[in-house]
Length: 420
Image (cartoon, rainbow, N blue to C red):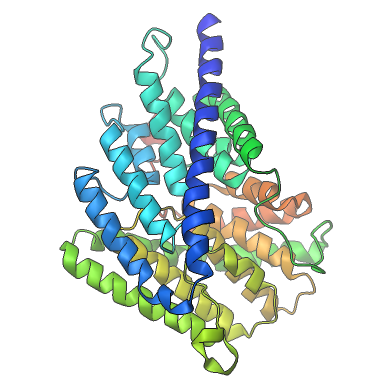
């Protein structure tokens, strides 16, 4: 009982430390660096993301001692392998490279470095407290830190705990770390919110009806969205795996290919979203995590433009990943799901596009990472819209069934290959 109390207390401390770390990481990357780029002359977007990839490669090689750009995968690898430590030098290198990648507009999310940062901090704390953890699972504070990182960056404590427990396995959760994960998520969220705000990260445009009720016909639409999102997630996962394989190419060639791709995709996005095809009047939808897509998404858009932006975002994330960028693919999956949901809603002339967008997020994210429960909880917490949960469960289950054994990460294991 005494050791249990110590575990809970240290999980809370890990969560608080992670919350502070994630808050200042977000402030420097998103509110200083990326926001400056987003409000600069649009032509900077043609070159700055490539410069960020070059800087990231140099940082990983020098500061990180040749560390890979992986973040979430590092958490999964350490979770399943007790002999694979998360080292301090690699941690510093990856976080510095994440700043240059994401601050310069790389099309990846802050959640990957936040999750990795929290798990690394938790693992380092646990390694220095052997007496308090004699006989405890080596993954306890690793999971607690990862949960706190996700909870903080999304301001979603339940999502953080569920995702950290659900993502290591396909179709199963790491149940033994449930209590530390919950405590750390709550602690991380409270610390982060105290330094920022408790407002949900996603809001609806003025005049857009919020999701409070649904009709039975929406359940059919939810299943349909689940099927389309699973197909899209399979394509997305295949493209991301190819991008990861491309990182094994020589540094100069992959940076050149990634740079040309990012510049081209950015220019196309500016052209197709501008009146009169003038890139100066368009939207920078391929830059950054993709939060800007949501405000644009609820404006009247042609169907072909929505579909094109889906592929532009997918390939921009793949190019950033192939170039050795450091970031997460959680939010890129969320953006992809929102676009698919909006397209399905447009095809069926739904009067409630918000519902279809939320269902798309839950289905696409749940299928891509094989985390249907965390995906549904994520949308509920980050939008403040609990009324969609029942149709979202239909969408997430349908997507998971169609997805099969495919996952966006190769480090997940089946329930029978490891005990939790």
